Length: 172
Image (tube, rainbow, N blue to C red):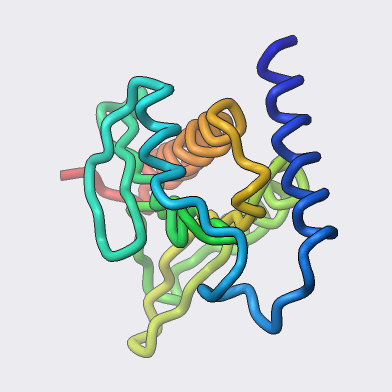
């Protein structure tokens, strides 16, 4: 029950902080409850290494059962609101995306405990698939951070495995 309690306390702390602090005009960076080094501390506590950095974002790599790597990106890690993302390896022409894929993603969005799938269409009419989750930073603790990262990595890997089985994703 320790992890459930830690997650509940983390979420409760975040909600209390969010309701106590004055509202901000946007969810973007700005003055508020900064916690420099938050993700670095969580990774040290979990024994994880940070696999990449890009500005205020970190990348964490997770091996999936098929031997590939799922990348979870954590942006605005020290800010009031933290954005987690994991992307499918698939990039498909819009005209080739079967309705079963969009139906699957919509069903998954209803079933996921945190986050949701988005289809991102480029100007060249290619579709990429991203799993996104935004949460209050003050509500995070190492246990909830681990749960979000691992579940997003697993979900992205499962989606890619389904696409590969359907012949829509070719692995090198």
